[in-house]
View 1 (cartoon, rainbow, N blue to C red):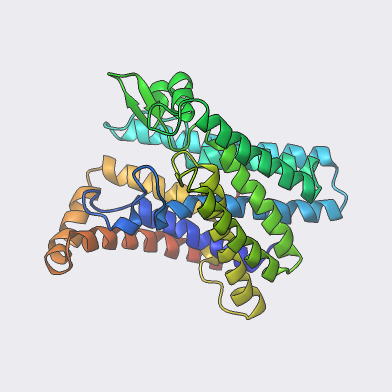
View 2: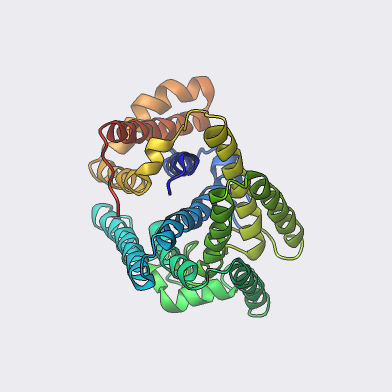
Length: 353
């Protein structure tokens, strides 16, 4: 079961990812396009969790259709495991391409697609094996409360001392996003332990998908507000932190995503508004992977720097400031892939992983 509003929100989310990931000058970025340094939550911090929430929504919609057609559970499980593995391997391949093409880039094992692949597979298995809403809610509560207890009772939340960083140091080492050869400490915002609460975001998406499938948009909106309120209250004890994907952050960002999906469903599915972003959403992973490779190739070819300098910084920075020039480059880069995905949509091309 495809719902147009979900494709649209997914596409807008990927476009926002590209806008945040492709600044022209990383020394000059608007605060709302930057991630929080540690505790806190900026608009940029909400983008990836919304995508993870949509992973859960999409799983619920797709698997519900297969349940109705009496597809054998073993076949469903095999399909979600294979697709999760393909997404995971694509993420590793993109990191390998960056390490090969860019002389200042080390090989990194975790990443955005890797986390999506793992959570897609795990979330799919949970949806197949635990069809009861009560059991899914109970599992979500156990994950969030258990992760909170783990963090607070094993060194706290500070960088380097928290359990997530210590696990990344032990298991990933120099294959993590950040590695200090002097101290031997590693940190990765898509690291090993943080994938557990990210799975919680996917579980929240499963429940949101069930409400969306039943056209219970009002309940979805109310649940989004409730999740944000609980997350905000919980943040007084457990700060919002995207890099650790804290339990309070799961509810805060997940609630925001639920409200966004409810609004899109009302405007697009119920009121007939145009599904802005749908073309990008149908080929979301293609757009993400394509933008990654384009950045690597342009950088390796020595094109990216001069392109930004002469087309964006020199003419725009004196008039509007360096942050505007940096954002204009990111917007133009995003627009190229937006147009490419729109062309693919018109031609009926859909690349699935």
